[in-house]
Image: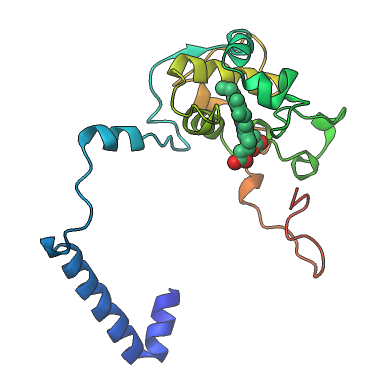
Length: 197
Ligand code: HEC
């Protein structure tokens, strides 16, 4: 739409732009640069770990909050994030607010297992980014268990709920569909309530 409007006003510029795009892709196919190399199948596999909103890419595995509490100690999450997610040097993983449940979602702290639009995002973040320094070493069962633990600590799921590739995408996050909502913007106020956090 935007490009169409732009094209109507400035057809010459768009022609040049499109021309350079075509030329660019022709060059990209040329083998003469001699820069870089094709990634190996193993390298691609290690990079190809993104988990989408619906969780279709989730691996088999399972875990509960009780198991997650143990993994949290074993994998030294506690060293950076503190006991039950509070008190470490790294960001808090559990709400500190007494009345967090009653607050509108944007008034709650910015905590991933509380504000993520989907529980699969919490899984994906832990899987790809934690523990800092040893990223990518957690097994799927451990990631399911840690996700369950952090969601339980934030009262998103009950303690006995088992998370797996079927149940995880079905978890209802407290943010509901508000993550996509535009906020009223007044000048000289933060663009989003509670942001920057
Ligand atoms: C060496 C310190 C360290 C260890 C160990 C560690 N983390 Fe973290 N963690 C961090 C830091 C630093 C951040 C903030 C990273 C950022 O915002 O990019 C973070 C962020 C997070 C977040 C997102 C927090 C938010 O609300 O944005 C989660 C969830 C998390 N860690 C879970 C874990 C779990 C589970 C483990 C154990 C497997 C773990 N971390 C181990 C340092 C650590």
